[in-house]
Length: 315
Ligand SMILES: NC(=O)c1ccc[n+]([C@@H]2O[C@H](COP(=O)([O-])OP(=O)(O)OC[C@H]3O[C@@H](n4cnc5c(N)ncnc54)[C@H](O)[C@@H]3O)[C@@H](O)[C@H]2O)c1
Image (cartoon, rainbow, N blue to C red):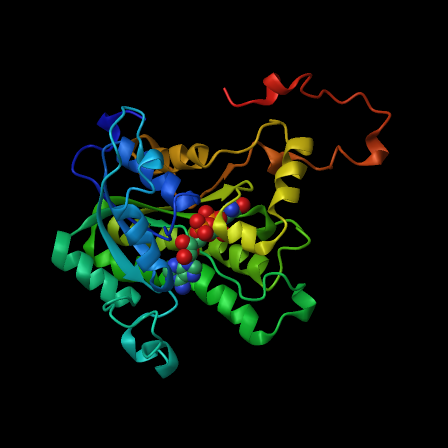
Protein backbone atom coordinates (compact mmCIF):
# COMPACT_ATOMS: atom_id res chain seq x y z
CA UNK A 1 0.00 0.00 0.00
CA UNK A 2 1.60 3.23 -1.10
CA UNK A 3 2.34 5.83 1.53
CA UNK A 4 0.82 8.45 -0.71
CA UNK A 5 -2.68 7.21 -0.02
CA UNK A 6 -2.78 7.83 3.72
CA UNK A 7 0.24 9.92 4.53
CA UNK A 8 -1.54 13.26 4.56
CA UNK A 9 -1.66 13.52 8.35
CA UNK A 10 -4.20 10.73 8.83
CA UNK A 11 -4.67 9.38 12.34
CA UNK A 12 -6.33 6.05 13.17
CA UNK A 13 -7.85 4.73 16.38
CA UNK A 14 -8.00 0.93 16.45
CA UNK A 15 -10.18 -0.56 19.17
CA UNK A 16 -9.43 -4.20 20.03
CA UNK A 17 -5.68 -4.79 20.00
CA UNK A 18 -4.20 -6.77 22.90
CA UNK A 19 -1.53 -8.89 21.20
CA UNK A 20 0.10 -9.36 17.80
CA UNK A 21 -2.08 -12.25 16.60
CA UNK A 22 -5.42 -10.66 15.79
CA UNK A 23 -6.95 -8.67 12.98
CA UNK A 24 -6.63 -5.39 14.92
CA UNK A 25 -2.84 -5.70 15.00
CA UNK A 26 -2.65 -6.54 11.30
CA UNK A 27 -4.88 -3.57 10.44
CA UNK A 28 -2.75 -1.27 12.62
CA UNK A 29 0.33 -2.45 10.73
CA UNK A 30 -1.21 -1.97 7.30
CA UNK A 31 -2.42 1.52 8.22
CA UNK A 32 0.97 2.36 9.69
CA UNK A 33 2.74 1.08 6.55
CA UNK A 34 0.47 3.36 4.56
CA UNK A 35 1.59 6.31 6.64
CA UNK A 36 -1.17 6.70 9.23
CA UNK A 37 -0.48 7.54 12.87
CA UNK A 38 -1.67 4.72 15.12
CA UNK A 39 -3.62 4.96 18.39
CA UNK A 40 -4.88 1.80 19.99
CA UNK A 41 -7.69 0.96 22.45
CA UNK A 42 -6.96 -2.12 24.55
CA UNK A 43 -9.41 -3.99 26.76
CA UNK A 44 -8.61 -2.95 30.36
CA UNK A 45 -7.98 -6.46 31.74
CA UNK A 46 -5.50 -7.14 28.92
CA UNK A 47 -3.76 -3.75 29.06
CA UNK A 48 -0.92 -4.37 31.51
CA UNK A 49 0.37 -7.46 29.77
CA UNK A 50 0.04 -5.84 26.32
CA UNK A 51 1.95 -2.71 27.38
CA UNK A 52 4.61 -4.73 29.17
CA UNK A 53 5.11 -6.96 26.14
CA UNK A 54 5.33 -3.92 23.86
CA UNK A 55 7.85 -2.23 26.14
CA UNK A 56 10.00 -5.34 26.47
CA UNK A 57 10.20 -5.75 22.71
CA UNK A 58 8.19 -8.99 22.59
CA UNK A 59 6.34 -7.71 19.51
CA UNK A 60 9.33 -6.13 17.79
CA UNK A 61 9.55 -8.82 15.13
CA UNK A 62 5.88 -8.48 14.25
CA UNK A 63 6.09 -4.67 14.37
CA UNK A 64 8.29 -4.84 11.27
CA UNK A 65 6.80 -3.04 8.26
CA UNK A 66 7.56 -3.84 4.62
CA UNK A 67 10.14 -1.02 4.44
CA UNK A 68 12.04 -2.47 7.41
CA UNK A 69 10.93 0.18 9.92
CA UNK A 70 8.91 -0.72 13.03
CA UNK A 71 5.27 0.23 13.52
CA UNK A 72 5.01 2.97 16.12
CA UNK A 73 1.93 3.14 18.33
CA UNK A 74 1.61 6.75 19.48
CA UNK A 75 -0.56 5.86 22.47
CA UNK A 76 -2.36 2.87 23.97
CA UNK A 77 -5.65 3.73 25.68
CA UNK A 78 -7.42 1.51 28.22
CA UNK A 79 -10.89 0.72 26.89
CA UNK A 80 -13.92 -1.29 27.89
CA UNK A 81 -16.33 -0.81 25.03
CA UNK A 82 -19.34 -2.25 26.85
CA UNK A 83 -19.58 0.90 28.96
CA UNK A 84 -20.47 4.28 27.48
CA UNK A 85 -19.73 6.34 30.59
CA UNK A 86 -18.82 5.80 34.25
CA UNK A 87 -22.50 5.96 35.28
CA UNK A 88 -23.02 2.64 33.45
CA UNK A 89 -20.24 0.79 35.26
CA UNK A 90 -21.36 -1.57 38.02
CA UNK A 91 -19.64 -1.34 41.40
CA UNK A 92 -17.92 -4.73 41.14
CA UNK A 93 -16.18 -3.65 37.93
CA UNK A 94 -15.19 -0.25 39.33
CA UNK A 95 -13.56 -1.96 42.28
CA UNK A 96 -12.12 -4.90 40.33
CA UNK A 97 -8.35 -4.97 40.75
CA UNK A 98 -7.80 -5.35 36.99
CA UNK A 99 -9.49 -1.96 36.47
CA UNK A 100 -7.87 -0.24 39.45
CA UNK A 101 -5.18 2.23 38.49
CA UNK A 102 -6.71 2.91 35.06
CA UNK A 103 -9.01 5.80 34.27
CA UNK A 104 -11.06 7.18 31.39
CA UNK A 105 -11.63 3.73 29.91
CA UNK A 106 -15.32 4.01 29.04
CA UNK A 107 -16.11 4.91 25.42
CA UNK A 108 -16.83 8.49 26.42
CA UNK A 109 -13.68 8.67 28.55
CA UNK A 110 -11.45 7.34 25.75
CA UNK A 111 -12.83 9.79 23.22
CA UNK A 112 -12.30 12.68 25.64
CA UNK A 113 -8.70 11.55 26.19
CA UNK A 114 -8.01 11.21 22.44
CA UNK A 115 -9.51 14.66 21.90
CA UNK A 116 -7.28 16.12 24.60
CA UNK A 117 -4.15 14.36 23.32
CA UNK A 118 -4.56 14.59 19.55
CA UNK A 119 -7.62 16.72 18.72
CA UNK A 120 -9.05 14.64 15.89
CA UNK A 121 -8.92 11.29 14.14
CA UNK A 122 -9.62 10.24 10.55
CA UNK A 123 -10.00 6.47 10.78
CA UNK A 124 -11.88 4.38 13.34
CA UNK A 125 -11.39 0.61 13.41
CA UNK A 126 -13.56 -1.71 15.51
CA UNK A 127 -11.82 -5.06 15.88
CA UNK A 128 -13.42 -6.45 18.99
CA UNK A 129 -16.04 -8.96 19.93
CA UNK A 130 -17.04 -10.95 22.96
CA UNK A 131 -19.77 -13.49 23.57
CA UNK A 132 -19.60 -15.09 27.00
CA UNK A 133 -21.78 -18.02 25.88
CA UNK A 134 -20.29 -18.41 22.38
CA UNK A 135 -19.79 -22.14 22.83
CA UNK A 136 -23.50 -22.72 23.57
CA UNK A 137 -26.07 -23.29 20.81
CA UNK A 138 -28.42 -20.35 20.55
CA UNK A 139 -31.30 -22.45 21.94
CA UNK A 140 -29.29 -22.86 25.14
CA UNK A 141 -28.14 -19.25 25.34
CA UNK A 142 -29.40 -17.13 28.24
CA UNK A 143 -30.90 -13.69 27.73
CA UNK A 144 -27.93 -12.19 29.55
CA UNK A 145 -25.44 -14.08 27.38
CA UNK A 146 -27.21 -13.04 24.17
CA UNK A 147 -27.45 -9.39 25.22
CA UNK A 148 -23.81 -9.38 26.37
CA UNK A 149 -22.74 -10.62 22.91
CA UNK A 150 -24.71 -7.83 21.23
CA UNK A 151 -23.41 -5.23 23.68
CA UNK A 152 -19.73 -6.12 23.28
CA UNK A 153 -19.78 -7.03 19.60
CA UNK A 154 -22.36 -4.73 17.96
CA UNK A 155 -23.49 -1.82 20.12
CA UNK A 156 -19.84 -1.16 21.00
CA UNK A 157 -19.36 -0.06 17.37
CA UNK A 158 -22.44 2.17 17.41
CA UNK A 159 -21.21 3.74 20.64
CA UNK A 160 -17.63 4.23 19.43
CA UNK A 161 -18.81 5.87 16.23
CA UNK A 162 -21.38 8.03 18.01
CA UNK A 163 -18.76 9.32 20.46
CA UNK A 164 -15.92 9.66 17.92
CA UNK A 165 -17.96 11.40 15.20
CA UNK A 166 -17.59 14.87 16.77
CA UNK A 167 -13.80 14.55 16.58
CA UNK A 168 -13.63 12.72 13.24
CA UNK A 169 -12.51 14.76 10.28
CA UNK A 170 -14.97 14.89 7.38
CA UNK A 171 -13.99 12.38 4.73
CA UNK A 172 -12.97 9.88 7.41
CA UNK A 173 -13.57 6.15 7.34
CA UNK A 174 -14.60 3.42 9.76
CA UNK A 175 -14.12 -0.32 9.49
CA UNK A 176 -15.37 -3.20 11.61
CA UNK A 177 -14.87 -6.95 11.37
CA UNK A 178 -17.72 -9.35 10.75
CA UNK A 179 -18.07 -13.05 10.00
CA UNK A 180 -20.06 -15.12 7.52
CA UNK A 181 -22.10 -16.51 10.46
CA UNK A 182 -24.09 -13.25 10.24
CA UNK A 183 -25.82 -14.50 7.10
CA UNK A 184 -25.24 -18.28 6.85
CA UNK A 185 -25.50 -21.05 9.42
CA UNK A 186 -22.14 -21.79 11.08
CA UNK A 187 -22.73 -24.49 13.70
CA UNK A 188 -20.60 -23.84 16.79
CA UNK A 189 -20.64 -20.03 16.53
CA UNK A 190 -23.24 -19.65 19.24
CA UNK A 191 -24.23 -17.57 22.24
CA UNK A 192 -25.88 -14.94 20.05
CA UNK A 193 -22.62 -14.13 18.27
CA UNK A 194 -24.20 -14.83 14.88
CA UNK A 195 -27.01 -12.43 15.82
CA UNK A 196 -24.43 -9.85 16.95
CA UNK A 197 -22.63 -10.04 13.61
CA UNK A 198 -25.95 -9.73 11.75
CA UNK A 199 -26.68 -6.58 13.77
CA UNK A 200 -23.20 -5.23 13.01
CA UNK A 201 -23.75 -5.73 9.27
CA UNK A 202 -27.17 -4.11 9.33
CA UNK A 203 -25.81 -1.21 11.40
CA UNK A 204 -23.00 -0.81 8.84
CA UNK A 205 -25.62 0.13 6.23
CA UNK A 206 -27.71 2.42 8.44
CA UNK A 207 -24.67 4.11 9.98
CA UNK A 208 -23.17 4.59 6.52
CA UNK A 209 -26.25 6.62 5.67
CA UNK A 210 -26.30 8.63 8.88
CA UNK A 211 -22.54 9.28 9.12
CA UNK A 212 -22.30 9.84 5.37
CA UNK A 213 -25.03 12.46 5.34
CA UNK A 214 -23.93 14.28 8.48
CA UNK A 215 -20.16 14.17 8.11
CA UNK A 216 -19.12 12.48 4.87
CA UNK A 217 -17.76 9.55 6.87
CA UNK A 218 -17.71 6.10 5.28
CA UNK A 219 -18.75 2.97 7.20
CA UNK A 220 -17.74 -0.49 5.95
CA UNK A 221 -17.26 -3.91 7.45
CA UNK A 222 -14.88 -6.68 6.43
CA UNK A 223 -16.27 -10.21 6.51
CA UNK A 224 -13.07 -12.02 7.34
CA UNK A 225 -12.24 -15.69 7.01
CA UNK A 226 -10.97 -17.76 9.93
CA UNK A 227 -7.80 -16.67 11.74
CA UNK A 228 -6.14 -18.34 14.74
CA UNK A 229 -6.44 -15.25 16.99
CA UNK A 230 -6.73 -15.34 20.75
CA UNK A 231 -10.50 -14.71 20.57
CA UNK A 232 -11.00 -17.38 17.91
CA UNK A 233 -9.01 -19.96 19.85
CA UNK A 234 -11.30 -19.33 22.81
CA UNK A 235 -14.30 -20.37 20.68
CA UNK A 236 -12.64 -23.76 20.30
CA UNK A 237 -13.19 -24.73 16.66
CA UNK A 238 -10.86 -22.45 14.78
CA UNK A 239 -8.57 -25.18 13.41
CA UNK A 240 -11.60 -26.96 12.01
CA UNK A 241 -12.81 -23.77 10.30
CA UNK A 242 -9.36 -23.15 8.80
CA UNK A 243 -9.26 -26.73 7.49
CA UNK A 244 -12.82 -26.40 6.18
CA UNK A 245 -11.85 -23.25 4.30
CA UNK A 246 -8.79 -24.77 2.69
CA UNK A 247 -10.83 -27.81 1.63
CA UNK A 248 -13.74 -25.82 0.23
CA UNK A 249 -12.82 -22.25 -0.68
CA UNK A 250 -11.90 -21.22 -4.24
CA UNK A 251 -8.44 -20.20 -2.96
CA UNK A 252 -6.90 -23.11 -1.07
CA UNK A 253 -4.53 -21.22 1.17
CA UNK A 254 -4.62 -20.23 4.80
CA UNK A 255 -5.79 -16.65 5.24
CA UNK A 256 -3.12 -14.32 6.63
CA UNK A 257 -4.16 -11.47 8.90
CA UNK A 258 -2.14 -9.12 6.65
CA UNK A 259 -4.55 -9.82 3.80
CA UNK A 260 -7.35 -8.37 5.94
CA UNK A 261 -5.08 -5.54 7.10
CA UNK A 262 -4.35 -4.53 3.52
CA UNK A 263 -8.05 -4.41 2.59
CA UNK A 264 -8.74 -2.32 5.69
CA UNK A 265 -6.01 0.12 4.60
CA UNK A 266 -7.56 0.25 1.13
CA UNK A 267 -11.04 0.88 2.57
CA UNK A 268 -9.65 3.64 4.79
CA UNK A 269 -7.87 5.28 1.87
CA UNK A 270 -9.10 7.72 -0.78
CA UNK A 271 -8.92 4.81 -3.26
CA UNK A 272 -12.18 3.60 -1.68
CA UNK A 273 -13.83 7.03 -1.61
CA UNK A 274 -17.10 5.75 -3.09
CA UNK A 275 -17.39 2.58 -0.99
CA UNK A 276 -19.64 2.82 2.04
CA UNK A 277 -22.29 0.65 3.66
CA UNK A 278 -20.56 -2.44 2.28
CA UNK A 279 -19.72 -5.88 3.59
CA UNK A 280 -16.39 -6.65 1.94
CA UNK A 281 -15.40 -10.34 1.94
CA UNK A 282 -11.78 -11.19 2.65
CA UNK A 283 -12.07 -14.94 3.04
CA UNK A 284 -10.38 -16.66 0.08
CA UNK A 285 -13.83 -16.63 -1.57
CA UNK A 286 -15.44 -19.12 0.83
CA UNK A 287 -18.60 -16.98 1.05
CA UNK A 288 -19.30 -17.60 -2.62
CA UNK A 289 -19.57 -21.38 -2.25
CA UNK A 290 -23.02 -22.95 -2.14
CA UNK A 291 -21.74 -26.43 -1.32
CA UNK A 292 -19.01 -27.96 0.81
CA UNK A 293 -17.06 -29.83 -1.85
CA UNK A 294 -15.27 -32.01 0.69
CA UNK A 295 -18.57 -33.81 1.29
CA UNK A 296 -18.49 -37.54 0.40
CA UNK A 297 -21.46 -36.76 -1.87
CA UNK A 298 -19.03 -35.04 -4.24
CA UNK A 299 -16.59 -37.93 -4.38
CA UNK A 300 -17.32 -38.85 -7.98
CA UNK A 301 -17.18 -35.30 -9.28
CA UNK A 302 -13.91 -34.16 -10.79
CA UNK A 303 -13.25 -31.09 -8.64
CA UNK A 304 -10.10 -29.12 -9.37
CA UNK A 305 -7.79 -29.16 -6.38
CA UNK A 306 -4.38 -27.68 -5.74
CA UNK A 307 -2.09 -30.39 -7.08
CA UNK A 308 0.74 -29.89 -4.65
CA UNK A 309 1.34 -27.99 -1.44
CA UNK A 310 3.43 -25.33 -3.17
CA UNK A 311 0.36 -24.41 -5.25
CA UNK A 312 -1.60 -23.45 -2.15
CA UNK A 313 1.13 -21.61 -0.32
CA UNK A 314 0.83 -17.89 -0.19
CA UNK A 315 2.46 -16.04 -3.02
N1 LIG B 1 -10.51 -14.74 14.07
C1 LIG B 1 -11.45 -15.02 13.21
O1 LIG B 1 -11.52 -16.14 12.69
C2 LIG B 1 -12.44 -13.95 12.82
C3 LIG B 1 -13.21 -14.12 11.66
C4 LIG B 1 -14.10 -13.11 11.28
C5 LIG B 1 -14.23 -11.98 12.07
N2 LIG B 1 -13.46 -11.84 13.21
C6 LIG B 1 -13.63 -10.62 14.01
O2 LIG B 1 -12.41 -9.91 14.08
C7 LIG B 1 -12.46 -9.04 15.21
C8 LIG B 1 -11.16 -9.15 15.97
O3 LIG B 1 -11.06 -10.44 16.54
P1 LIG B 1 -9.80 -11.40 16.41
O4 LIG B 1 -10.31 -12.74 15.99
O5 LIG B 1 -8.75 -10.74 15.62
O6 LIG B 1 -9.35 -11.63 17.92
P2 LIG B 1 -8.54 -10.74 18.97
O7 LIG B 1 -8.50 -11.56 20.21
O8 LIG B 1 -7.24 -10.28 18.41
O9 LIG B 1 -9.44 -9.44 19.11
C9 LIG B 1 -10.54 -9.31 19.94
C10 LIG B 1 -10.24 -8.17 20.88
O10 LIG B 1 -11.42 -7.73 21.52
C11 LIG B 1 -11.02 -7.24 22.78
N3 LIG B 1 -12.21 -7.05 23.62
C12 LIG B 1 -13.10 -7.98 24.04
N4 LIG B 1 -14.06 -7.38 24.80
C13 LIG B 1 -13.77 -6.05 24.82
C14 LIG B 1 -14.36 -4.92 25.43
N5 LIG B 1 -15.46 -5.03 26.18
N6 LIG B 1 -13.81 -3.70 25.24
C15 LIG B 1 -12.68 -3.56 24.50
N7 LIG B 1 -12.06 -4.60 23.90
C16 LIG B 1 -12.60 -5.83 24.07
C17 LIG B 1 -10.05 -8.30 23.26
O11 LIG B 1 -9.25 -7.85 24.34
C18 LIG B 1 -9.25 -8.55 22.00
O12 LIG B 1 -8.13 -7.68 21.94
C19 LIG B 1 -13.71 -9.45 16.00
O13 LIG B 1 -14.77 -8.60 15.69
C20 LIG B 1 -13.98 -10.86 15.46
O14 LIG B 1 -15.32 -11.25 15.63
C21 LIG B 1 -12.56 -12.80 13.58
